[in-house]
Image (cartoon, rainbow, N blue to C red; front, top):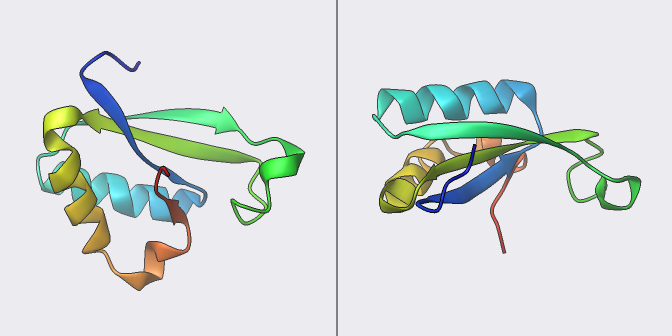
Length: 85
């Protein structure tokens, strides 16, 4: 559940990538939560055809650290992580 001190960090379209991201955040001590959202047919192309995406939420004060942790995972997950615009 998102509170006033939380922010959407990113969205993940692949379950294996989500697990890697969650493990990296946990290992770095970054608090996070996840919410699942259904993707409308019109937006599925953006998420590589995924019917659902995992929205990763973190505390505002940890957002930059969390983004750095995810970016350090490299290009192997890059195409399945979607940053908010």
